Each structure stands twice: as C-alpha cells, then as structure tokens.
Image 1: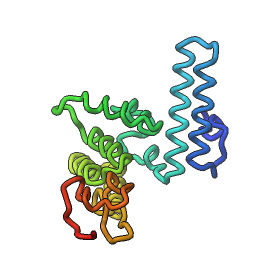
Image 2 (image 1 turned 180 degrees about the horizontal axis):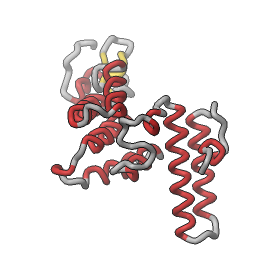
Image 3 (image 1 turned 90 degrees about the horizontal axis):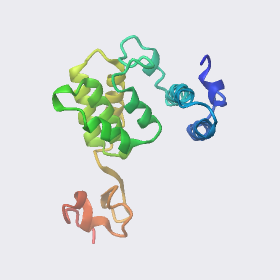
Length: 195
C-alpha cells in the first residue's frame, strides 16, 4: 500500500466520520468478496493499517508512526491487534485482550493502551494514571508523553464534565437526570446542596 488516503478513497482533508465510513464500506466489500480467506486477511490488514495511519494523521498524532522514539512505528507494536481494535472503536474487544495479559507482563505500552481505552470511555482519572505509569516505565517514548501531556492540558477534573442549571456539577452517569444532585459524586450521595 503506497498511499493510505488513496487506499481508503478519501482526501487529505477528510473528516474522521468520512474515514470511518470509507473503512466500513471497504471492510464490508472485502468480507463479501469471493477471495480466499488468506487474501481477505491480507486486505483487511492493509485496510487497518491505512485506517490507523489516516485517522492518526487527522488527529494530529502522525508522530505515532514516524517518531524514532515511538515504540509503535506503524506495526512493530507488541499489541498491534489491540491498537487496531481501539482505532476501529471496538473498545470492549481491546480491553478484553489487554485484561488477559498477566500482571507481570504488563509493559509501558500495555498501560498506554489501557489509558486510551479509559480516555475513549471518558474515565479521565484512570486514563491519566495509565498514561503516567506508561511514561514512568518508558520516559523516552514520545507517544506516551504526548498522551500524558494532552491529559494534563485538557484536564477537566476527572469524571466531571459540566454544571447543570442549578450549579451542581454532574458526572457523566448522572448528567442526563433532571436534578443529578442526589446521584452526584459518582453515586456517592448528596454532597452539593442545590435543591
């Protein structure tokens, strides 16, 4: 695969949604083709590689592939299957694989990927801790440092995401309720008197 954008059939200014739609369309055509299983697997691997590359370029993390300090470098990852699942939005599958790794084999990359999963779910405190652990285990890795620094700059205080009309700060669990005060502090009780 020479050009991942051409492979996906999207332009360099494509949105994430356009890239995802192209990925799904191509994946469906590969799976529905009359090719052999090995050909399908090979094409899906190419598709996943193109998708990962383009999505990371869009998100501004192109160094993820090119930086000489990165442990990933476009495929040398110990957990490339987990990375593919995370990038494809298959968070539960990725976490299942990671959770199956014994504690004594959990590397800096393991903690980084676990942090990505937590961040995608909005569990920012856990993501922060995982990124911090990854950085402490491999301080020279720019990929881990970039994720950790982004968490430091964009910190919203953990689970809390907004304040409702009464001034009560709510977590994502409680946010959809009319008055979330009774459930605030992540179901810990009425800690902020607003009603």
